[in-house]
Image 1 (cartoon, helix red, strand yellow):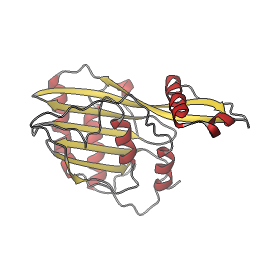
Image 2 (cartoon, helix red, strand yellow; image 1 turned 30 degrees about the vertical axis):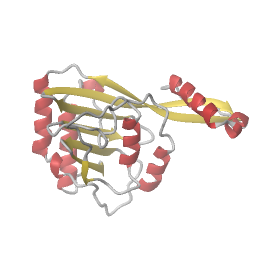
Image 3 (cartoon, helix red, strand yellow; image 1 turned 180 degrees about the vertical axis):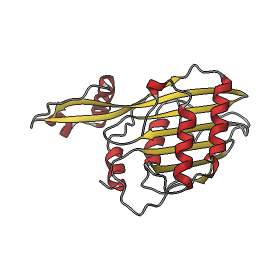
Length: 243
């Protein structure tokens, strides 16, 4: 499966019916200017949809002060594995960290309902599907249809400010500010582990989408793996995602 086809398949599971986080504009706040971002189609687009419809908010669209810092390091995106991110944030002089995980939600409905449902009915069905996350539907007969969506679960990490600051510094030393938007490969990527890195420094936003390779081909591969490892140190071993 090519990266383009995998991206399109993942897009098909994106949800637009999350509980929306409301961002209030205040004096002295500004949205970001984009310094670097992968071209479309990209897993970044899907990632921003997840974030926008959760309490995290879209990092590119957040209105922040000039001293705001946030790093989101996502990993996964394979159809057969979990996708999650570790988030390090510094706002008003205080550090915080979060673990966010994407849950797939499925529900079986009659095909006749799916074919004729109004927009309002479909929204209600999607909301019902989100209450059934984590349980796979295995028996979908000819007269049924599988409704799927995603839900983003965000948990605050109970770790000291000093550990979060150290993780941030480790990511900076690894070269997170120099990551390219994408790495051109001389092969077709399969349905494997991918990193999406989002960095916000004041009004500056940059992002990367880079496939994991077992043997790094260049500096970007080594950097993204080191950045991923730096933030994953904030997690207990059983919560760390392995490529």
